[in-house]
Amino acid sequence: MEALYKEVLREARKAVSLDKAGRSKEAVEHYMRAASLLVELSKMTPEPRLRRIYAEKAETYITRCEQIREGLGATEALEAISAPEEVLKELPPELAGAVLIERPETTWDDVGGLSTAKELLKEAVVWPLLRPELFKGPREPWKGILLFGPPGCGKTLLARAVAGQCKATFFNVSAAAIMSKWLGESEKNVRLLFEAARKAAPSVIFIDEVDSLLSTRAADEIGGERRVKTQFLVELDGLRSKPGENVVVIGATNRPWDLDPAMVRRFERRIFVPLPDREAREEIFRIHLRGVELDPDVDVGELAELTVGYTGSDIRLLCREAAMEPIRELMGEGLPEGDVGPRPVSKTDFVKALRRIKPVVKPSDVRRYLEWAKRYGEI
Ligand code: ATP
View 1 (cartoon, protein in one colour):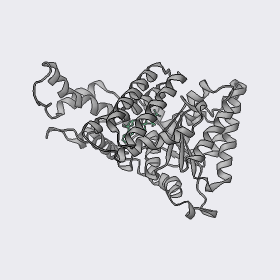
View 2 (cartoon, protein in one colour):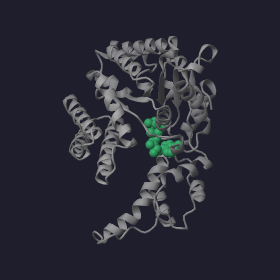
View 3 (cartoon, helix red, strand yellow):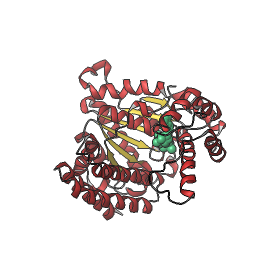
View 4 (tube, helix red, strand yellow):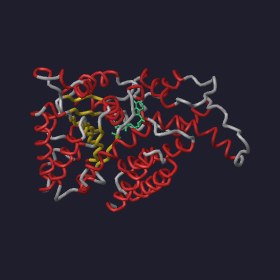
């Protein structure tokens, strides 16, 4: 798998350098090859989060090819693809497969609701990364932020928006992959990760499922796991003692109660990312229906009322499901000739989708998050 990953990097770098040199037509072949290798890689990867990351990355390469075909030159979109590839040259090969580097273009407008979390993140991370000279002495910035809350409510999205706002390099780290891949050499790799982030600063190191790396299950820990944890604590303390380094760690977890207390202390700001309320759900619907033609009988406010308990991720699925109905109808009658398009998405499509897609988070889970938030977090 490592060989395949290296092949992806080779193809992607080749594509980007050709694209930058104005030889975009030649670049297409390499983008497509990188994309198809990524799809292959995602099929072989047992870990769902990594699979998703690889698929998303493949999508960015395919999008760039479409832009080239439409005659678009090396635009800002290319910046987003190419910049991380340059950083990748610095990334030690040992980190391949567990760390993905991105330069996200996500903005705050892509995140529905979560106004408190956004404000806290602006103050704690975005401003200090943009204007480090203002954040000295008593205004020293926070180096460890924990986002906690039910799955699918926007933790990853928020971290991406932070990196997007600061034009920071985004190190997307899969904690589960670290634990399965790196045992033995784990602490060295944690050190290399922080070194690479310092070199590429400003950087955001985002660690999803941080509980699998830093849990309290001390009794079960084998040597390797304990060493990863210790090295991680050392690195985080190192960042705090050198505030000018412009590297921030954002951890995310659905199981904050499993975190080691020493770790909870290191994440100085702990931000609750809750289920969306009515107003937030309406915003999320609007985000995921951008560019979709809607029938006048669709009332987004009503959809928000009907989706109590749905996460942002559930709403995204719902929109996708409803938006697919007119396409199914169109294609069901055989491939249409000419430029016959689908009809607008109607209320009935949403009603059907609502029957299929049900909320995944249980009310009892929500209570548990709130209790933890009251004790340790900021709501
Ligand atoms: P997990 O803990 O499972 O990793 P998460 O909290 O990190 O979940 P995300 O990965 O950010 O959740 O959300 C999954 C997808 O759901 C996002 O890519 C986005 O499309 C959609 N989504 C979730 N929350 C929101 C939101 N607040 N606004 C807009 N879209 C959202």
